[in-house]
Structure formats: C-alpha cells, structure tokens
Length: 216
Ligand SMILES: *Cc1c(COP(=O)(O)O)cnc(C)c1O
Image (tube, rainbow, N blue to C red; front, top):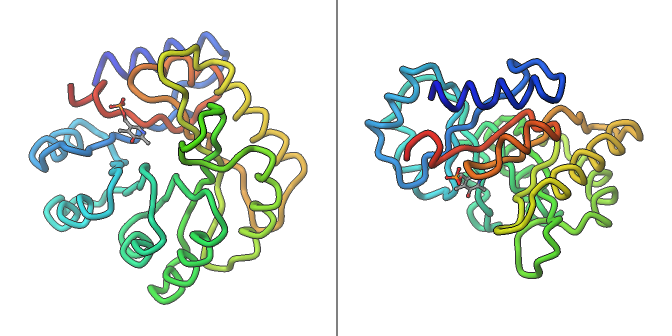
C-alpha cells in the first residue's frame, strides 16, 4: 500500500497535480473478505468488484462503511441488484442499461452515481461506447432523474502504450465538461490499473482501479 501511494504521489507531482486528488478503488475480485478488511484497516475507503454476484456475496460480510464500485461490465438483467448495492457504477455504455438502472434506482429510493465507459482501444468486441456516441448518450442520461452522471472510464489496451488512450479520455472529459450537459457533472476520470496507473495519473486520472498492485 505504501509503495502504491508513493507511486501515485510521484506521478501526480510529475504532472503538477496534488496527490490527494487521486482516489484509489481497491479492486477485490477474487480477494477474500479477510484481506478486504485488512485493506480497510489500512485506510482504503473504496472497494471495487467486477461482478454483481461476487459483490452480493461479500457486501454483507464486510460490514464497514465502504463506497462500493462496480468496475466490470453489467448485463441489463443484473441492474436491479447493481442499483441497490453499488454507490458508483463505472461501466455504463448504453442507454438501455442506463434506463434500467435509473428505473431500479428509483424503486430503491436512491440516486446512483455512474460513469460512462468509453472504448478507445479500437478493439471490437470490447465493452464501452465508441467515442463518437458519447455526447448523445450524455444528453440522454442527464435527463434520467435517479442517475447522476459523474464522469468517464476506460480500460487501456493490453500490450500497447496506454498513454494515447488516457490522453484521449482526458480530452473527451474536458470537452464534455466545457460544453456542459444538463444533469451531468464531469468530476471523475476513472483510468489506470495495476500495470499502467502511473501513466494514468500523469494523464489526469483521479480514480485508479487497482487489484494486483494492492493484493498481489
Ligand atoms: C480487474 C479490474 C481492475 C484491476 O485490475 P488489476 O490489473 O489487478 O489492477 C480494474 N478495472 C477493471 C475494469 C477490472 O476488471
């Protein structure tokens, strides 16, 4: 944890940023609850799961006040549970899913924070919205009363320089922020995983999703 925090701090300073502006989401897929509790004792406040079923099984056991993030892809038929148990969903990439989350969040009496996942790797079959469809989706999602759109997320391609992808997401984020979509607050840029988080922080990430870097 100390090494991770130091690495983030160095990357932030290289970019002239305040290290405390970067929040860590500890991704706990496959990690047993005992180790999750240790991470919370070490001061982490945000946990991320990639599957709804796994999160459902663990949330009751964790107990602590935690902000729960869903970082993996979400099937529309799992929206009911997802809207109830997560505080932020990073992987919204289609209006059909957004509408169902909005409906389910409304039934649960919650306003759910969501990020739009953008596919910038150019790899077909990957999750995420093509960037040219971002503005129409933001416009439509901004009108959904039980969702609060808070930013963008991406996953860098494997085995290639992640920097152009991170820089492009940052650009999309700034453009959307300056243009201003009603009901949308561009606050979070969720990018960077264990292999590429220093580059992501240098490019402006303020939410990094770390599994192996924390849990080995
Ligand atoms: C698993 C996962 C992570 C964490 O991956 P590590 O490489 O272990 O840091 C981050 N984001 C998503 C979407 C994931 O599925």
